[in-house]
Amino acid sequence: MLGKRITIGVAAVAGAFALAACSSAAAAPRPAAAAPAAAKTPRCTTADLSLSLGKPAEKSDAPGQFDVPLTYKNVSNHTCGLYGVPGVDLVGPDDPTFGPVYHLPRVDNGVKYNEVTPGMTATATISVLTPAEGGKSWTPTKLNTIPPGQTRALTADWPSDLPVLRQDAATHPGTYVNGILADPS
Image (tube, rainbow, N blue to C red; front, side, top):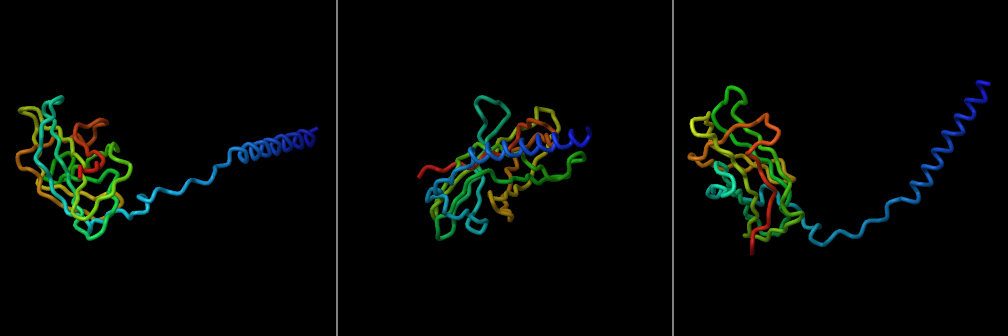
């Protein structure tokens, strides 16, 4: 009796695999269409770019929160792709709880693809929440950023009059970096 159960069980499993194989074959992915020509343009490397921080502007709908433009300029002699969300670290005094580096969370809300011709720019915005009046203040001295798809950083001085509320452990912090947007031509 046990041998018969095992045989029936093996047959059931084999049937399930056969059914799954038939279903998979029917739903097999079709070859993808050729990628658009723009996708063939190589990504901008760190060496292709220079960096500048724009003037902080307070958000009209969120008092105490500022947007700081993080602008990359293509300083190479070729067009390259710059899209995605850059890595951003704010570096400043050693905070007793979190240390001297604030790794900003990323929000992927930029363009899906962006070509930057020589001399042109693309910008990501850093949204910064400042401490409440009388609250604990931490002011970075510099910003390190790694362009999307790269491993080497670019550095810029942080505005000395823009403190940041450290929320390293928060699930929805008020300071973060947004995705890269194409700058108008």
